[in-house]
Figure 1 (cartoon, rainbow, N blue to C red):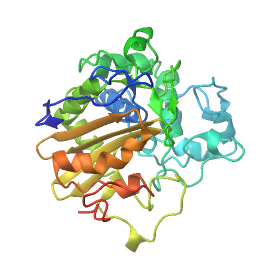
Figure 2 (figure 1 turned 135 degrees about the vertical axis):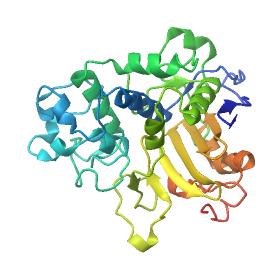
Figure 3 (figure 1 turned 90 degrees about the vertical axis):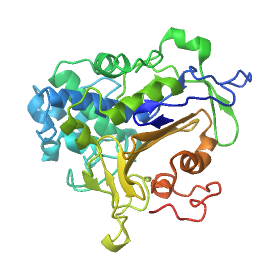
Figure 4 (figure 1 turned 30 degrees about the horizontal axis):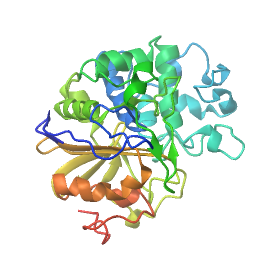
Length: 346
């Protein structure tokens, strides 16, 4: 819990593995897509320093045309974009707002090939591949190591001692495994490559420190901090996934919901708010803030079934926020409270 940009409470509950060892506030857990918000925060520091421009085409930072690069496993197959000149339109802003036109990941395409499905920048469609592309541009175009930049600019700045973009052997002593929806456990994945879309390991203590620093805007200019939580692009779909679903007719869209930079922004009973989730088959994380009072709740769960409780828990701390729970977790049966009745809008 964060109040006025300061951590006020950190607690842990439950078990970190099938051996019934307790979760602790310094237990290392998978950050999943919370990584995207930390990466975006790092990118905005580069913007402040004039190293990258949100609206400059990313191809201008590269020595060769993007499809000419043959890449290692941690990057997407950029060569698949050969013959589609729209890659030249892509900017950092489009990649951070999930609007390059990619699927979430190329391997999810029927043929496994990366492609652009719509005019870049024209609509929101969740894409981890876009974040991987921006990582590629920073590493190959600017010559910067993204893992090192995130370590220095974020993890070290906020005292996140047990957070890393890659596996560290010292994590093994206090590590959370995970549970699937059917109740079966799965060991923690030891990630061997930096992935801006979601390779971060962290703890609830460390993520609370990041959330507090984020709402304070520490390390950023006022303009850069404001840019991150400004509505950049309307959300036009009924839910976040599937990522390339048809857009709703204008009258059916939620007018107060938009993409920020690396997160989702919304307007509710308390004014502007923002959120970022993190999910895989054994992980459920959420981070919700309201700008008024610089208040946040961060939840890390090593059991994906915990996500059904998130709206209830966040409301108990922050009150009604207008957070887009049903858009985020389409089809999920939530616990009691206004969300269960379908009243998750302002």
